[in-house]
Image 1 (cartoon, rainbow, N blue to C red):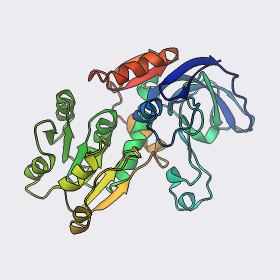
Image 2 (image 1 turned 180 degrees about the horizontal axis):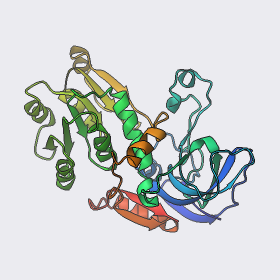
Image 3 (image 1 turned 30 degrees about the vertical axis):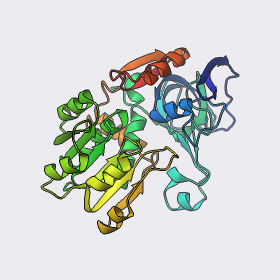
Length: 338
């Protein structure tokens, strides 16, 4: 079968590899139909993802059809469409025992630490597969995993109805966070450098938008919040400046959630954290959020339609990454299809 392998940063190859075997009685063989390309995949491609190991088959936003099942599989059968949990945990460390397996000490992420979905077939445990609603297409279904990420970030933020949420960055991640967050609070302020993204945020119901190319973020947020500041800020931009901007724009007793994965140091102010008694929290991956994400999609509370702007055949992965690297604002979310 064919797979896309990145052997070192900037180098993709389409190669022939042996198909996987069902090594456990509760394994299922999934034929991939679509895989999303995430920002973290781009960082693996660029060599700026500190967690990546090479060579690697990337891809963790996974959609496929069950082709074969092991003898102990009870909930799936050939022909079922599924999305696949991207994380593998030990179940024994402090984080796992305390219900936070998404930061397991021995955490492995498909497509990062072990091979992911940019290959024709995957063998995975039955427990890691979730049935997809018939109403969602394969391409749109790659966005189920980002919805789980958004749910995790809102949970880490303890987002509530009376919060004013600031989302910094309105790409694929920030816009998905907005879809989830607006189910919990109508008071969402979006900041970005791209005018078309700010227009999209307004069309999606943002209470206010901030153009970072010509407005000071903290001043603008204060103006939109009667001088208090956001009560929750989620940094979905992960630039060198965005975490500090979030601290400045968040009011007393607020929460700041960082979603960046860049290992380079960035500047923050102890005074802002201490004087306002801010909670600064990380949010990584997701923690058992797939059933909730699928329920929201099934019930029409989160619409995945239109999120993917471009598709490429998975054997044209190089063209897909070239399109993303060109930074054309029209390229919002890319999916590889099989």
